[in-house]
Image (cartoon, rainbow over all chains, first blue to last red; front, side, top):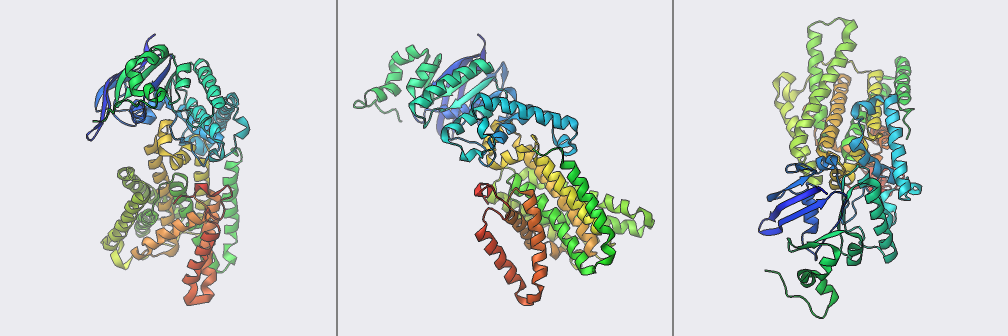
Length: 266
Length: 311
C-alpha cells in the first residue's frame, strides 16, 4: 500500500533542545498506526510538525505525495489532515452543532457575499450543512445534545465531539492525541471500536498517540516508538512488545516498577 | 437558524426609520439630536462587537477609525459644497462621502490589523490604543482639516433616516455575517485560535475581515457624526471615546448583537437623563456602570451564561 504520510529524517530543535530527531515514518493509507513513547518523548511535537503548527528544522514531510513544508495548519486541514488535541480544545462557548459547523465551513463554498445576500442558494447550502451535521452527530449519538454548549458536555462526550468535529473537515488522515486519556475501561473499549469503525466508514488513516498500552496494542496494526525524540523501534504490536529497546525505554518501566531503567537524560 | 426572516428584518428597520423620519419635523430638536446620537453609537458599538465580541480581538482604537471616516467624509462634502453641487444631488454626495470615509477607515483597519495579528489580548489592545492616539495627533496637526482648531463648516446632512438607516444596516450586516456557516469562523477564532486553525479556519483572514468590516462601519459612523455635529475637533476622538464604545460592548454582552445595540441606547441616554444632577452626572454614570457590571458580569443581555466573557 502506498504511504499517505511520510516523514524523512524530520528534526526540530527548540534552542538547544532537540525535541524530535531524524525521525523516519511511513504511514500506509488506511492504516491504524500507533505512536507511543514515555512522557516528553516528542509525540505531540511530532503531531504539531505533521499538522503544520511547527515547521521542521531539518528533514521533510510529504502528505499524499506532496511536501507540506511552509503550509499552515488551516491549509493542511484543507489537504485532508485533521486532528484532536491532548487537552480537549473545543469551541467552548459554541453549541455542539456549531462546533461541527465551523469545521464544515472548510468545504462549504459560501462566503461573505452569500451570507449577506441570503438568497435561496445560500439557504439551500445552510440546510445541506445542517443535514450533514445531523447525520454525523447521529452516528456518534450526539444529536440529542446538539444545542448544548460544548463546555457543559460530560468529558467523554467532549472527546467524542472533538473527533466528530475533526471528521467534519473530511480528512484523509486523522491524528488522535491521547483520545483515551481520562476514560474508564468501558469507555476505552468503546473508543477502540469507535476508532475502528471510523477508519472503515470514513475511509481514512488514523495516527494515534496514546499512553494506554492495552488500547494501542489492541487497536493498532503498526506501532512506532519514540524516546527522547528518537524513533527506537517500529513494527507490529507483537514485535514492539518483544523489542528489548522498547522494554527498556518504556514498557520495562511499567512492567517492573522495582527495577527502573537507567536514566537517558544527558 | 433564523435565515429566511433576516432580510425582512432589515427592510422593516429601514421602513421604520423612514416612517419615523416623516415625523421628525414635529419633535423638538434636542430629542432629535439625541436620537441621532443613539443611532451613531449603535453603529459604533455593533461594529466594534464584531471585532471585540464575536472575534475576540481586543481593540481599543475604534475611535481612531471613526475619526478617519469623519474627516474624510467631511472634507469631501465641504469640497463638493464649495464646488456648488446642486441641492438635488446632496444625498448622493453624502452617501458617496460616507462610503469613502468607511473605505478609508477599513483600509486603516487592515493596515493596523496585519502587523498586529501576532499579538493577542492585552498586547493587541495596547497597539490599537496607540494607533487611535496617532490618528488623533495626526488630525491635530493636519492643516487642511483645521488642525487643533477643528474642522468647521461641515454641511448638516445627517438626519434621522440616515442615522437609523445606517444603524439598521450595520446590525443586519454583523448579524447576517455571524449567523452563517462561514461566520461561525469568527466565533471559533474567539474561542480557540489553535483549534480553529486545525479545523481549517484561516484565522488571519477572519481577523483581518473582522477588522476591515468593523472599521468600515466605524468610519461610516464618523461620517454621520461629522455631518450631525457640523464641527469636528480632534479632542472629540480621544481615548475616552473608544473606551465608551468598549463599555457598550461589554455591558451588552460580548458577542450579543442585540444586547450591544440596547446597551448603546442605554449608555447614550443615561448621561442625558442624568443632566439634572449637573456636576454629579459623570460620577453617577460611572457608578451605574460599576453596579451593572457587578450585578451582570456576563453582560446585561447575555442569558446563556458567563462563559463568553473573558476580557
